[in-house]
Image (cartoon, rainbow, N blue to C red):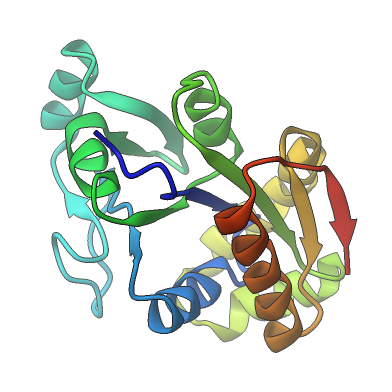
Length: 198
Protein backbone atom coordinates (compact mmCIF):
# COMPACT_ATOMS: atom_id res chain seq x y z
CA UNK A 1 0.00 0.00 0.00
CA UNK A 2 1.37 3.39 -1.04
CA UNK A 3 1.91 6.05 1.64
CA UNK A 4 -1.04 8.44 1.34
CA UNK A 5 1.19 11.52 1.31
CA UNK A 6 3.41 10.29 -1.53
CA UNK A 7 2.96 12.15 -4.80
CA UNK A 8 3.88 11.53 -8.42
CA UNK A 9 5.16 14.50 -10.41
CA UNK A 10 5.23 14.35 -14.20
CA UNK A 11 7.71 16.71 -15.88
CA UNK A 12 7.20 16.93 -19.63
CA UNK A 13 8.67 19.26 -22.22
CA UNK A 14 9.89 19.50 -25.79
CA UNK A 15 13.52 18.31 -26.07
CA UNK A 16 15.88 21.00 -24.80
CA UNK A 17 13.50 22.78 -22.41
CA UNK A 18 15.51 21.80 -19.32
CA UNK A 19 13.46 19.04 -17.69
CA UNK A 20 16.37 16.64 -17.06
CA UNK A 21 18.36 19.35 -15.25
CA UNK A 22 15.32 20.31 -13.16
CA UNK A 23 14.62 16.66 -12.34
CA UNK A 24 18.15 16.32 -10.95
CA UNK A 25 17.76 19.50 -8.88
CA UNK A 26 14.54 18.16 -7.32
CA UNK A 27 16.28 14.89 -6.40
CA UNK A 28 19.19 16.73 -4.82
CA UNK A 29 16.87 18.85 -2.66
CA UNK A 30 14.25 16.25 -1.73
CA UNK A 31 15.55 12.89 -0.53
CA UNK A 32 12.04 11.42 -0.81
CA UNK A 33 11.94 11.89 -4.60
CA UNK A 34 13.11 9.13 -6.90
CA UNK A 35 13.05 9.25 -10.69
CA UNK A 36 10.98 6.59 -12.39
CA UNK A 37 13.63 4.92 -14.55
CA UNK A 38 12.05 4.27 -17.93
CA UNK A 39 12.79 1.32 -20.17
CA UNK A 40 14.10 2.32 -23.59
CA UNK A 41 15.36 0.73 -26.78
CA UNK A 42 17.70 3.59 -27.65
CA UNK A 43 21.47 3.22 -27.23
CA UNK A 44 23.01 4.72 -24.07
CA UNK A 45 24.82 8.04 -24.38
CA UNK A 46 28.43 8.04 -23.16
CA UNK A 47 27.56 9.41 -19.69
CA UNK A 48 24.51 7.19 -19.11
CA UNK A 49 24.37 4.17 -16.81
CA UNK A 50 22.03 1.21 -17.32
CA UNK A 51 19.49 1.00 -14.48
CA UNK A 52 20.22 4.57 -13.37
CA UNK A 53 19.40 6.78 -16.36
CA UNK A 54 17.32 4.20 -18.23
CA UNK A 55 16.80 0.45 -18.35
CA UNK A 56 18.29 -0.21 -21.79
CA UNK A 57 16.69 -3.18 -23.56
CA UNK A 58 16.27 -4.45 -27.13
CA UNK A 59 13.22 -3.76 -29.29
CA UNK A 60 12.27 -7.45 -29.09
CA UNK A 61 12.39 -7.39 -25.27
CA UNK A 62 10.34 -4.18 -25.25
CA UNK A 63 7.66 -5.66 -27.52
CA UNK A 64 7.39 -8.71 -25.24
CA UNK A 65 6.73 -6.42 -22.26
CA UNK A 66 4.04 -4.60 -24.29
CA UNK A 67 2.38 -7.94 -25.10
CA UNK A 68 2.37 -8.87 -21.40
CA UNK A 69 0.78 -5.48 -20.48
CA UNK A 70 3.75 -4.66 -18.23
CA UNK A 71 3.76 -0.89 -18.90
CA UNK A 72 1.70 1.91 -17.41
CA UNK A 73 2.60 3.84 -20.55
CA UNK A 74 4.88 3.57 -23.52
CA UNK A 75 5.55 5.54 -26.68
CA UNK A 76 7.68 5.45 -29.79
CA UNK A 77 9.74 8.64 -29.99
CA UNK A 78 12.32 9.31 -32.73
CA UNK A 79 12.52 5.63 -33.76
CA UNK A 80 12.91 4.28 -30.22
CA UNK A 81 10.50 3.02 -27.56
CA UNK A 82 10.22 4.41 -24.02
CA UNK A 83 8.02 2.98 -21.28
CA UNK A 84 7.12 3.07 -17.55
CA UNK A 85 7.13 -0.42 -16.01
CA UNK A 86 4.18 -1.05 -13.67
CA UNK A 87 5.81 -3.31 -11.05
CA UNK A 88 8.96 -1.19 -10.72
CA UNK A 89 6.86 1.99 -10.31
CA UNK A 90 4.50 0.40 -7.76
CA UNK A 91 7.41 -0.84 -5.65
CA UNK A 92 9.12 2.57 -5.72
CA UNK A 93 5.93 4.48 -4.86
CA UNK A 94 5.45 2.57 -1.58
CA UNK A 95 8.34 4.43 0.04
CA UNK A 96 9.00 7.45 -2.19
CA UNK A 97 7.61 10.38 -4.12
CA UNK A 98 8.20 9.81 -7.84
CA UNK A 99 9.23 12.03 -10.75
CA UNK A 100 8.29 10.92 -14.26
CA UNK A 101 10.44 12.39 -17.03
CA UNK A 102 8.02 11.50 -19.85
CA UNK A 103 6.44 13.11 -22.90
CA UNK A 104 2.82 14.07 -23.60
CA UNK A 105 2.00 10.64 -25.03
CA UNK A 106 3.10 8.96 -21.80
CA UNK A 107 1.26 11.53 -19.68
CA UNK A 108 -2.00 10.83 -21.52
CA UNK A 109 -1.66 7.10 -20.89
CA UNK A 110 -0.63 7.47 -17.22
CA UNK A 111 -3.60 9.79 -16.61
CA UNK A 112 -5.96 6.88 -17.30
CA UNK A 113 -4.85 5.25 -14.03
CA UNK A 114 -7.00 7.26 -11.65
CA UNK A 115 -5.45 5.63 -8.56
CA UNK A 116 -2.14 7.39 -9.27
CA UNK A 117 -1.80 10.74 -7.50
CA UNK A 118 -0.37 12.70 -10.43
CA UNK A 119 0.75 16.32 -10.62
CA UNK A 120 1.36 17.14 -14.27
CA UNK A 121 3.82 19.93 -15.11
CA UNK A 122 4.66 21.01 -18.67
CA UNK A 123 7.85 23.00 -19.28
CA UNK A 124 8.41 25.12 -22.36
CA UNK A 125 11.37 27.30 -23.39
CA UNK A 126 10.65 31.03 -23.88
CA UNK A 127 10.75 30.70 -27.68
CA UNK A 128 11.84 28.45 -30.56
CA UNK A 129 15.10 30.31 -31.12
CA UNK A 130 16.14 29.61 -27.53
CA UNK A 131 15.10 25.97 -27.90
CA UNK A 132 17.31 25.46 -30.96
CA UNK A 133 20.24 27.14 -29.19
CA UNK A 134 19.87 24.78 -26.20
CA UNK A 135 19.59 21.69 -28.40
CA UNK A 136 22.79 22.59 -30.25
CA UNK A 137 24.70 23.66 -27.11
CA UNK A 138 24.04 20.47 -25.17
CA UNK A 139 25.88 18.61 -27.94
CA UNK A 140 24.09 15.28 -27.42
CA UNK A 141 22.50 14.94 -30.83
CA UNK A 142 23.48 14.96 -34.48
CA UNK A 143 22.42 17.93 -36.65
CA UNK A 144 19.66 15.72 -38.12
CA UNK A 145 18.38 14.81 -34.64
CA UNK A 146 18.44 18.46 -33.52
CA UNK A 147 16.38 19.39 -36.57
CA UNK A 148 13.90 16.57 -35.96
CA UNK A 149 13.44 17.52 -32.30
CA UNK A 150 13.12 21.20 -33.25
CA UNK A 151 10.43 20.35 -35.83
CA UNK A 152 8.49 18.34 -33.18
CA UNK A 153 8.26 21.42 -30.95
CA UNK A 154 5.05 22.85 -32.47
CA UNK A 155 3.26 19.53 -32.08
CA UNK A 156 4.50 19.05 -28.49
CA UNK A 157 3.44 22.51 -27.33
CA UNK A 158 -0.15 21.92 -28.41
CA UNK A 159 -0.43 19.29 -25.65
CA UNK A 160 -0.05 21.72 -22.73
CA UNK A 161 -3.81 21.61 -22.07
CA UNK A 162 -3.44 18.05 -20.74
CA UNK A 163 -1.35 19.34 -17.81
CA UNK A 164 -2.12 20.91 -14.42
CA UNK A 165 0.67 23.51 -14.66
CA UNK A 166 2.57 25.08 -17.55
CA UNK A 167 5.90 26.72 -16.69
CA UNK A 168 7.88 28.88 -19.11
CA UNK A 169 11.54 28.15 -18.39
CA UNK A 170 13.22 31.51 -19.04
CA UNK A 171 15.47 31.12 -16.02
CA UNK A 172 16.36 27.72 -14.55
CA UNK A 173 16.49 28.84 -10.90
CA UNK A 174 13.15 30.66 -11.10
CA UNK A 175 11.56 27.70 -12.83
CA UNK A 176 12.90 25.37 -10.14
CA UNK A 177 11.45 27.58 -7.37
CA UNK A 178 8.04 27.42 -9.06
CA UNK A 179 8.24 23.62 -9.16
CA UNK A 180 9.23 23.62 -5.47
CA UNK A 181 6.14 25.66 -4.59
CA UNK A 182 3.94 23.25 -6.54
CA UNK A 183 5.46 20.23 -4.77
CA UNK A 184 5.13 21.85 -1.33
CA UNK A 185 1.48 22.77 -1.88
CA UNK A 186 0.58 19.26 -3.05
CA UNK A 187 2.39 17.55 -0.20
CA UNK A 188 -0.03 19.45 2.04
CA UNK A 189 -3.17 19.36 -0.10
CA UNK A 190 -4.19 17.00 -2.93
CA UNK A 191 -6.26 19.42 -5.01
CA UNK A 192 -5.01 20.56 -8.42
CA UNK A 193 -5.63 23.85 -10.23
CA UNK A 194 -4.60 24.54 -13.82
CA UNK A 195 -2.15 27.41 -14.10
CA UNK A 196 0.26 28.95 -16.55
CA UNK A 197 3.25 30.77 -15.06
CA UNK A 198 6.38 32.31 -16.46
